Image (cartoon, rainbow, N blue to C red; front, side, top):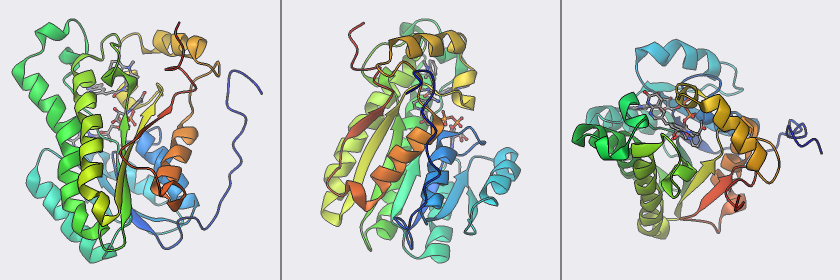
Length: 270
Ligand code: NAD
Ligand code: IMJ
């Protein structure tokens, strides 16, 4: 096995998710983790809907969605707006009736809060990072519950090691991810009786829009590769495959967990 890149993952297709429907939040472009997961879901027969942030992203998400085998409805949604969340699930209920999965790939903090000292974080910066990156999972789970409980289902949210370890510049996002991960466990307990599972994927660094804006990201990628047990960084498709697993019946006994898809970075002591 080449230590620098994943051995080519065969473009395997199956009927694993045939007849299953769900919604994906957080596609901004083709590098988005949400898109990596969406592609795997679609390859295994799922029918998808997408919620995107703002008109600016609409065309891009439209042309990505058009590459999928099944027609995918698109809805605008800013998760800080209750009325947007409500409207998405009203349209989803009329388009799909029931759903079996939801994907949460949303994070945001002010750029000035992703550098310098955490002690400088403003009340408003803290509030916004937590609203968009952590509370949104609760809001979406609540709105999705009536659609998911018809047949049971699975929710997956993306998180990062900065929730439990101090990672330079991750700062207020680390606090928000700690809240997101606690949310995963509490929501799993609430929704378990309805056969709705809630899990997280803690991905290693991937060069997406949300990562490339960070100063020193390229150096950080190199450091990550050198320390990781597998001697390389994770690929979008590998996170997509973990998403497929957690959103499919293959993981029916797993809820409230965070699975690390980080090429074995976290297990290393140095
Ligand atoms: P990305 O920029 O492609 O995705 C982030 C998404 O969040 C975008 O689609 C953006 O539109 C959306 N978003 C931001 N504010 C929003 C709002 N108010 N309402 C609705 N949507 C909003 O970057 P990504 O790296 O694919 O990020 C997806 C998830 O993966 C995030 O939760 C991120 O924390 C997590 N993650 C990323 C990495 C990485 O290295 N890229 C590693 C681990 C976890
Ligand atoms: C983000 C900031 C600092 C260090 C970081 C990251 N490292 C990694 C990320 C080491 C891997 C990417 N990540 C895991 C995120 O969750 C990113 C969230 C994010 C990114 C931005 C950039 C642009 C902006 N606001 C953001 N808010 C959240 O203005």
